[in-house]
Length: 248
Ligand code: IPE
Ligand code: IPE
Ligand code: MG
Image (cartoon, rainbow, N blue to C red; front, top):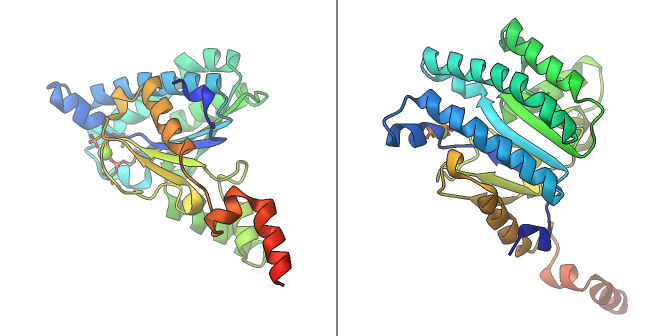
């Protein structure tokens, strides 16, 4: 069954994990896995746009990934700049709007320029919002939002914090996917995933194709999202509110 037939999440967030293992299994350098991961991401963006997902947020480089060998870190930086230069014209024609989410200050001038250019070139697109989390950490986002409010002398509430987050321009993810078999968040969308449906796949990111996305979406379609309510309230809201009135 094609996922398009089922319920399509408005916002999908993905921890794209397993590039290194994909490469190592093939006796290739880890960066080769990241390159293959870019191809996988490219196909994922296209598929999400085609099936009507409105927001795609991907974890491409975490605040903690600086701890990797220097050669891998510089490889990832180069890959980002190259991939943006190569793909933005086509993304542009597919109606994809790119947002960079993360701490820009820690990045080189070249990377910052690449990101700014990609954002500017796609700023008028509306078909799919594509958030690239790069030099990003969920805790960083919460802390920078709190610092922003404190600097403005604004009260800190759930609502004001939410509005000051780097991801404030989109609703929370409906579906959070992690590939590569690990079952952890690794400092991704910590605040925004409060009510996301979680989906873990053993497939390594370079192997995560359109059919795998459809499988995740089909699984999502079977979930009952209760947001604290009872199942009865979710399945027949009119009936249970009538019952509530009667009881009152
Ligand atoms: C995820 O793949 C991509 C990044 C963290 C940049 P990994 O590089 O973490 O792949 P594994 O987990 O080592 O296989
Ligand atoms: C999370 O993957 C970060 C990205 C996918 C960019 P990691 O591979 O860095 O996560 P840990 O360190 O195994 O938790
Ligand atoms: Mg990993």
